[in-house]
Length: 199
Ligand code: ATP
Image (cartoon, rainbow, N blue to C red; front, side, top):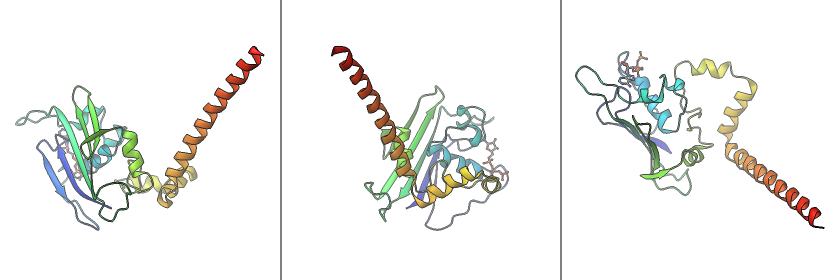
């Protein structure tokens, strides 16, 4: 699986629709200071579900929408589409091409979609769990992050390794199952109380 294409529209400095194509292997984005290189990595994080505006270098979520210049009107919405090549089938049960998209309007209305079908953020998270590509994945290492990784606590480091070896999805499923067990135990306790009252 690899990142094949990224389409941006109204996202930060990218007022007009832009499509970036990547090939397998390493890609480098070069350009003068302030030309929008980091905005591209912000777009990848954002479409994968980043909720922290601080890590997107803004103050409020609306800051990801093109804010206009003297010559160009501000955009009404921001949209990012990330297209993954899944020809090798590393993401089982998904087609050969997967398009993940996120759209945000100034009104605050927002939407996530997988292959143009509206979905919940949870579904996007579950696709990328254990792939290293999720919003907290280790595939995206921005300026300053290497230092952060090196100074991570043992627990934080363990999370990175767990994602790399692919056990996060099992841990999540285990937590969900434990929650369900707890709920069921609660129901059973209630039932026992009621039965004791009847008897
Ligand atoms: P450097 O090499 O200095 O790190 P860079 O190429 O990574 O720079 P970015 O930080 O990606 O550049 O882009 C910064 C530019 O994006 C600034 O000119 C900023 O005004 C512009 N920008 C950020 N958010 C918006 C927005 N919402 N609307 C319009 N322009 C924006």
